[in-house]
Length: 609
Image (tube, rainbow, N blue to C red):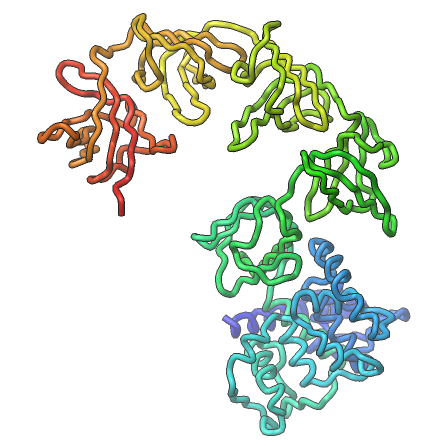
């Protein structure tokens, strides 16, 4: 593949020479086809890419020697130091390495060197070797170029993994042992090919024309692109990460993929989800991923305690929840701030005010808030989430300041529903609400529901923490939440969701988007029942399983099909019939009709390993 890449580079050069290059339409006055046919296309290509520049008089001066600092800077640019997607990494790089760079007496090149240090391509020892004092302005030798190119391309580990290498150059014996592996790497990659006489000439100096060719070959070989992305999922078992940028896609993490958190090496299990990151690709392969924060992006609802500014950057002091600990959050530059829904400054806040911080990449991206108590009117509940410790409500509103926001409900919340005292169990998705908040926590809910009756044919029932029922009405499917206090009657007798069969005719009493009563008077159920035991056979073709119950020596045949029976595991997650295996423990609920037990619900517990 490396030979092919080199051949493609040569073809690209030939193609370039056949067009505008042959007409001597180069960007520099001293580059012509007659004198520099071997490097002119690459000089033009690297100039167009923004990696190299000329002099103020419009010349390139191809025969000038390249200094060590110039050579390092060129390869840092080609490896991404100037990419817009890497701006956050460059900021982190400066915060970590500016102290070390301050001793080097630099008038330029700080960005490129900080980037090389951050990416691990350079070390502090390399600064001493190539940059300290007057060294940085000395000509770069070809041997040094081999080392620097290898480091910039991330090939040092591969290059130094072999203790002995064979070089075909005529002066191979004069190439010192400390650079032989690097020379072998750049030769194998097709970046450096030696001189016309067959020598490598490690002590020879590198000219601007030569480094332009090396640069073009390295760019072609690496084929790097960079993108600011969001990590939406991390699967440690499958060794994949899902990234959302210009598109959302999962990428395999191999032993060759470098993972970082703010520049520190990390394992896949360390990478948080819902965090911004910079992804580096070569073709379609993920080369590296650098998370910009150790924690997932979050919304902090807190009490304002004060602020200070450092170098024009706001640092906000807050207390969260019942904690007495004061936490400090650093804001991005020119952080947007609203108070009581209007544009404001941080000086608008006073101690004790409610404040909401949107935190991403480890910094506050926006600030909003107001007085301790706040009322939100004319909102609609779009989601209710029953968590392990908290109940949260998400609302929609015509006011952009509140639309799509999620709020935690206080444990002692006061609830009024349709002008009567009530509780949160009677508040449903779709209810119109007025919310009273204290420090961003809902302390009072005034809700109203629209009530109507809906008739349809049962299509499916989802049994979970928040059960749902789907019915078909006039050819269209409609899904409703089923609260715990929903009243269910089947043939005028008390029933449950487990008793329904697909195809039953139902009449629903609906408040907002929730069902408060379900009536079924046409069910074909004749005798309800329950069978519990071990699966001894499964036949998906004919739609039955055989179950050996606890109190029988003869297996019971249970008829069930994917389109008429609900299959779930103990957690309430949906299953298919073909996932049931011999030895599994099942609880079958249904009815005996015409002597056959037909299951409407099968709860599956997998057999122990």
